[in-house]
Structure formats: structure tokens, C-alpha cells
Figure 1: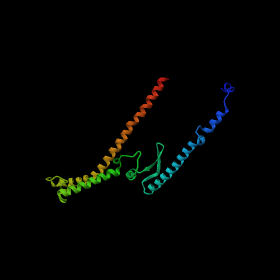
Figure 2: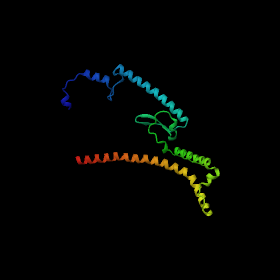
Figure 3: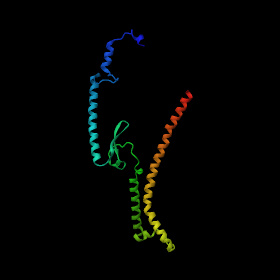
Figure 4: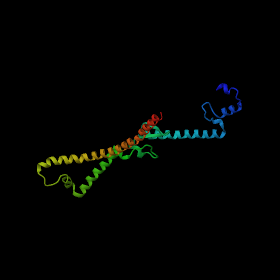
Length: 202
């Protein structure tokens, strides 16, 4: 190749003009044109300004205890805040990759507690305090049965909010896991069929 091109004529000015525009890595230089230099300078200033604003927000939210230990992360080339799931509603703005609220045990526990207290208040207003507790067990049973039934009903009443908490959160989390598992089949089968096509081509 060197022998073939040794006698080729080229204008050295062309190479000089290229060197004035491109650097050693092939990137366009800031000095390629005055307009380009001004655009890149403005971008540099805006990035620094955004960086200062972002750092100020990170410091403020970190003091309030809203951020995880890593404080920030990157998603699709963007800096994002690592916000605790239970603190998402406290942060204004767009949340990327946010989890469903009812997949958080704190939320489902709060809902279960509200339901439990509401039932207690509604039952007491409807039947009175004493009658409400009598309604835990059906009337007319043999006395020995009540010694077994009353503790079981009382324990069941206290366990019910915990069961509701676990069931709702587990259902939501399990549904998300199932969706991710199904979506992963797309990539698995794509790789499998690609490998088989390459094998057949050989």
C-alpha cells in the first residue's frame, strides 16, 4: 500500500486545514469556528451552573434524611437522586424508576392500621363498646367452647392487620417480579435464536 501511494500527489494545505478543525482523536476543536467556541463555552457554563444547583439540592435533602447512602446515581446518562422509597412523595419533581407505593411494607402497614382502627370505631359506635366485643363470638355456644374460641378470635383480630400488610405488599412485589421474569424471556429467546441462526449460517 505504501508503494502504491508513494507517488500519489496531495495538497499539504488540505491536511493543515483538517488539523485546524480536528484534534488527534478525531473530535472537532473548539477553535474550529467562533460560533462553535461560543456554543461550547455556554454549554460549559450551564453545566457548571446545573452542577452547583444539583449539589445544593443533594446537600439539602441529605440533611433531611431523604437520600440513601450513595446520595446519587446515574440513569440513562443523567444524574439522579437516590431517594428512599418511603420518602418519594416528599420529593418534588420527576421520579425515575420509582416503585409502586403499595409494594412498600410501610404503606401497607399504615393502610392496615387505618382499616383496623376504623373497624373498631365503627363497631363501637354501631353496637356499643361491650356489645362490639361480644360480637367476636356467636351467642348460644357451650361455655367450654368460649374458653377456646374467645382467645382464638382475639388473636385473629390482632393478626389480621399484619396478614393484610404482608399479603398486599407481597402481591405487588411478586407481580413486579413476575413481569420482569416474563420480559427477560425476550432477551433469552433472542440470544438463543441468534445463536442458532449463526450456527445454521456456518
